Length: 557
Ligand SMILES: [Zn+2]
Image 1 (cartoon, rainbow, N blue to C red):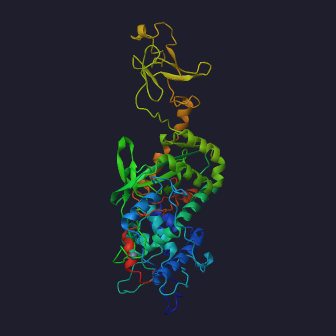
Image 2: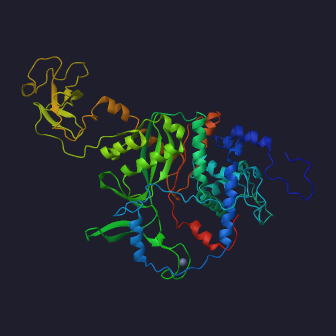
Image 3: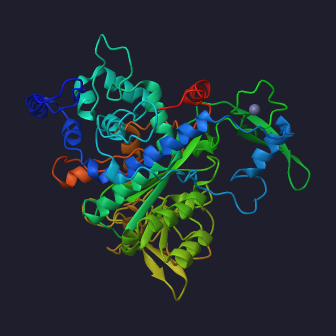
């Protein structure tokens, strides 16, 4: 209830807690989002709030100052195409220094440091920002977190829609709806779509989303919500790009003409004459590239790398890949290195990393061992598609590329082990449902073992016949299969990021969606397990960019 002591002429607190209603909502609303937002531990986010207000101040300063005029940029559009092509991580020639494989956020250090963590709290916004009071950081943050807790995309459009249409959500975030006869701005009113877009943009550019993500995962590890494990598992996932591409022709080292798909060049200024204005050409959709899927299917899109803990099925980190055309075998090492650097405590427990066959590469395994002290286990990549049909033991029809012999009667031989003295792999005929060898009563016996032994046929295959299989780590071995059972859990993590957390499309790269579920799971508020965060690929040419340019004369709140 409102206190009767509100002095005449003072603004009545619009978000004064109305406990009866909140109690009612806590008991009736389906879903944990209301509880989490209601009991939001804002104290943990004070430093992020201060950083945001400082970044907002810098942003306002920047947009009110006219851009300095510099020399004309003499680069033509075609020159820009070639420069941008040769700057990519998948450029025809390696650049020096090499282009980073993973997307590196701008990481802009805020210039102003005036707002301190102790200055801010929900509903308490710093006074330094001249003009109209800005919207409360905590309310905006709760808006984005709440949207994802409800299973919607944490995108400005979605947050806006929810705040507008769901009064309980708006109130628990600390916003009120505009009164009918009030036309003017008030900082506690539900923010406009433009304000939400600005918030998202500033949070992205100042790297605050990214730091919130790290802080959540670190807290979860420190408080035991996420337990350390021995293995890490990784994979990549793709997102269709909502942009067009062109085929750029270039000359390779030998002078031959080659082709590569690339996003079109553009400028982000609003000059009338792009041919002569001083601004630089940039890719319209930086990071987009051709992704080759199985069956030679090609997708124009963005790529993200995801790393998690297989036993708990929890994603620890997700990051956009700088150039989607990068092969999966190249993204895993830098990402593991980053995750271990971000979480030194976790690094203590990790001994092994799992990946699919894209990382089945001896040089890469050696690099993991030498530089990170980790064993890389990858699904076996036979690098051949045809079965082996020559030089086989009697009674065998073929040996699959995965090293499994199939006999004339169609049975798969069971791998038994290695006889190092003769450099051979040993296999034995399997046992049927009755527990007896399938060889007993087999019609192919005259061509095969032709013995009445109850143990069935045993064969040996020399290392030379299976040259493509590493005898030191044969993929047929039970141990290998047992280790690799943890790998598919990353598919479930990706599904959860994309579907349950509604991150099915990337709209901004480097933006991370913080999910606070895990933290609350510890307190018993939320039973479901947690997710870390998600980066998004940026479409620089988004509507928000254009809006920002259109309204650059006005300071932003
Ligand atoms: Zn320009």
